[in-house]
Picture 1 (cartoon, rainbow, N blue to C red):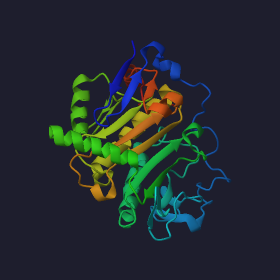
Picture 2: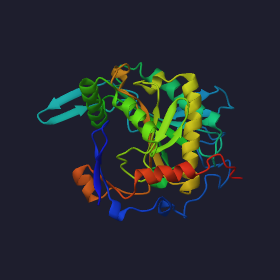
Picture 3: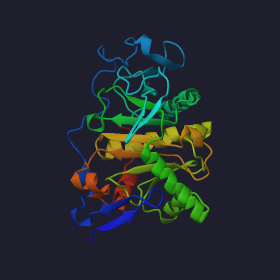
Picture 4: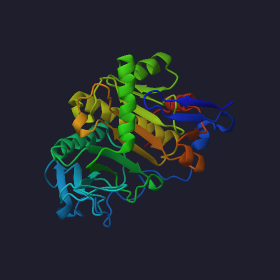
Length: 336
């Protein structure tokens, strides 16, 4: 029989459809190509070295022509850096001027690579660059929320092959972020503890959904996973904001993200996926009830009418089986 599961940190419900559940290996898509296919440099790619659009340059690490990570303004930004923050209320209409930042993080000089193929130190450098830029942007008093995310593959929204992530800095806090923060605060008020800290303890005690554990992070399939192979990467240290992660934690995060994305790459044949860093709003960086983490969602299932109408996802897989499948993938194997 199917069952409804609730994520106690977010209060979201999910239907685990046991009757229609697939075995983990059935989600492998043989049509996907490897990240290493194709040329290391592409003359048509705006992210490849030598093709830089200098008018869009924001940050280079290191700050020279031999950059390893580069941040550029989005050529077609959703928000504009220029302009005043204006709020307007007219009857039932509410409007905020579209000011903010929309930038692209070029993760490597190489055109044909990805986090699963890069060295962990290269992945860690991307996260360090995220934080360096975030501290610069959050000083802008117009900004309320910073979102770092990655779209890998066309089904995940990526329009360019060259490995890149994005940052959007918003003049408001998205409703989903507010709702999740409110639920975390309610739990903290009732129990006196962070819901995510409790979740880490319980997942480690049970072990069935844990995929990886390192000194600083626990990687697991949430009890109420919204999709097959839904993954959370949660720091053991209680920190509300990703911006407060220490250097040793970021070094470990590079290892962790390399390994879990490599497990997906090897186990599911390089699936399209999204990841997002869920972190505290700019004005709530020290909130005791918030706990930053990364959510990874492979694009191997799709929302339909029921999900749109109810807000409840139907997951045709068991999180415990997905976690076991990924634990067995040898991410340390040489793919050469």
